[in-house]
Length: 443
Figure (cartoon, rainbow, N blue to C red):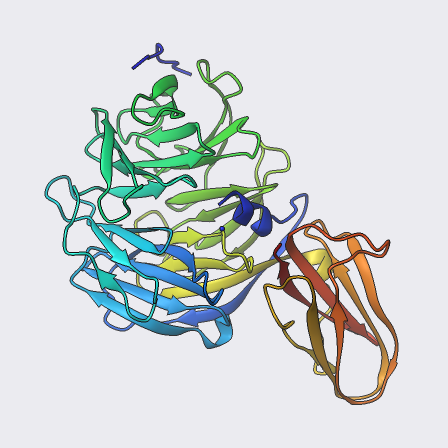
């Protein structure tokens, strides 16, 4: 294993589907909420898509040996599909149709594998694997377990993770990117940037050990892997919650910015020009990072009445569902489902003049229907926009009588070209009112 001297100073597809533009404010809309019965201390949430039905699920872990599986396909009517008792719920991650959970501890064999091919009837595999504090799984089925140290497993046999590598040190969390890069947030030690193209023998590309960072907790990088956002969960007062690093040369990381709020940070997820942050008592926050070194608050939703520094409030987020909906769990307030829309598409509300319904099917390929209901007759326009707010297709622009109607989209733009897979918005206007909804084209 090679090392370098320290410097002092449905996964890739889902990222593309969830991407939204920066350079301005966003509207963070609550579209669903579920109170989880008998929950004590919710810790993390991950999304899961049943490939046989395309239904979306939130899997929420409770630190008191409980895991909830919630059907969030229609967030407004989200329901608990299953509750798994007696399994660790400190961290939860999925691979294929399996759920991996751990207890946050440092010894024993309490991490578990659960078959969720039928989300309403999960089957717990009887054999566990070594305990861990956190788990991450790459798009190629490599599992990274943290604390003690960093351990790397191959999931070729999903129910029997095969350990390939183990490092020393403390360890806390990690972020795999692509097939060859891992960002290892090693607690009180440092942040290590690894080349994991050979997961059995990774190479150290660089290390961040800035003495002002109290605890290397977690982080994420921009799409081009130029900038790293590093969360310090134990930062307090004037110490930055998030430091920003230029890692163009991983062997010589350079600190180029910071972010500090009057709360404790937990996790950050970067997609396009937006960063999504689970920020404990400050709730769920979205930052515009179109200027990567100077994040600006673009939108927020406070899931808790708590304020100030401390470990309470929005602790976990998942931003990669095909629908584009975002899952957030609050330690004591349950599961929240949000949609995030550019404010340029939400300037006016429908105000009861009409009801724009969800397209059917969604996700769709190659075409979908868009139903709507008019309280009174009038001119109706419906247009399709991409995630940057650019118009892709004009579907309707004519008069309609009161009643129920529908139009359709064949997945093509105004020039007749097939649109790319991804998230799109359809916006209806009638008179002085408008309403926007989200849909997903999957090929």
